[in-house]
Image 1 (cartoon, rainbow, N blue to C red):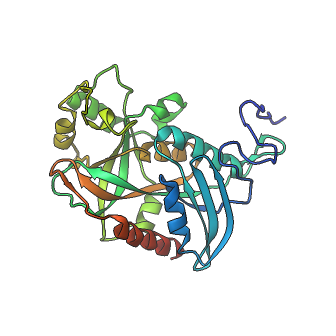
Image 2: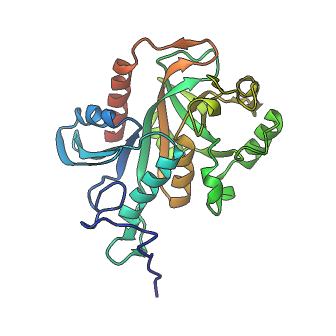
Length: 292
């Protein structure tokens, strides 16, 4: 007999929708674009030919519609891997758990999940307003360390080399390293994208080496990150969600990819004067790639 998931573990709203996202099965497409900013959902959906659904709860704004005949869902996550834990698990539940019986389905659905975001470069030769695609993600957040089998998808040699090179402080969460989905990488990327290795930090200030009134525990961390190499690979940028998207997607059987605009370079101290038009170009490029 299939074990049912208890109401305390899979919380549903009175209308049968999933707890945080306020969505029901059938209301999401198999191709999903994640953005941090709720306002960016409307911008992306503005390119759709038709709108099928709009839903909102807290920072989670969802629009499902069609672009050149392709059904696509755009969803805002807010900031951070803690929110990604909510979003990816609830998206998976919508397609792979029967919400009425609370039983896991025998036949699983695999989603294509693409994050479009902004990021700061950690190598001086990466220009602002560039498109960067994350081939690997390094999680400083520790989220995937709470899940069983995380070592099955992680790049353990990279992890160990990174911790050794940086003399990683044991008071911090142990970093984990996850690859993107290579099939989605091949579908989406072209010569306009810089391939990179992305750190997902659990904060914007101290966790990314910034100091305002508080000193950080390792004031050389960004210098170490910039200098680190592993098999001719170098770490290229900071953001705050990619590692959890990659890790959870690997465990749950979904395809994931992150593409970001570089809006600042932490090494050259340069910053984009106006990245919004660049973001719109990136959005259209991703939408067109999904229809091919």
